[in-house]
Image (cartoon, rainbow, N blue to C red):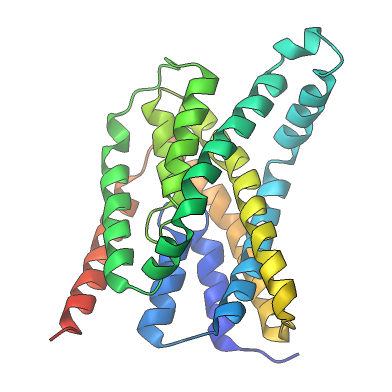
Length: 271
């Protein structure tokens, strides 16, 4: 099995940044743009797909108890009126509605997102947006002041715009849930329960294109996927601890400086 250090590095970057609030898509784009690592269009799509399969597996394993309980309660609600008062029944429909909102926002933006992936200026701007969001998160109070359904619709809306590179999906959705009054623990859980259908749906769209292109996955890509899974597992646990402790400032500062570096480097190349 051949080891490709470039793809291994990108796998580690995906694992670390997929869950921490710093934008995995932004980091992958900047890694390729700064170091000149390039794929053809279909190859990039296939590589992105295998890395996302690895990290969504981390989410499925980490939230297996919540997923099993909620899915069971949601299914029971179809034939039991009593189960329609369960948390799983409410979460199930809320997540479906939120995912539809995400899809309605994200799908029309596909061409714009692909163009942004090739621009350090666009990625840098996205990172500054993330820095701003993380900076104001401590101002949000935990009052559970809105209904679950209303909160999920808002989170789904924000998740739709988080497809742009540089805008952290986890950071923006957790911030949105906190803004709506959710507790930190519930905001963390909701963010990743909503991530599952969003990532799986996007991956299914990519699968059809990859299959049509007839791409054979190089051995090095499988190693990168394993690295993304292993690193991502620990990164998700680290994010949970940071969310519960409210330590957002570190990531805000990091995203600000990385965003400024990306923007300045882009401007410098124009002269």
